[in-house]
Length: 63
Image 1 (cartoon, rainbow, N blue to C red):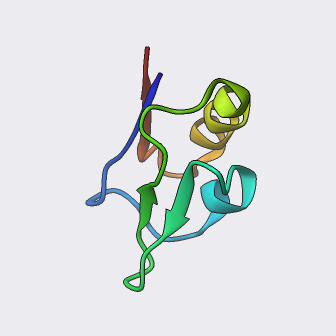
Image 2: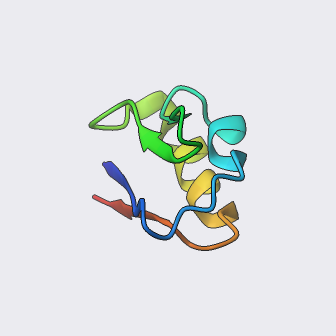
């Protein structure tokens, strides 16, 4: 599984990094980035939840 953050859509709320810090992090510019590619099996559910909770739908999950 792969998570992709659209940096042009991200508003930097940090919810994804709070929901799944093993997969998402915030840059100094306050934009989310994926730090685990591919997403480790034990973090797949949390990574999906973080994508679903993104208020601007900036995260895409692919299998």
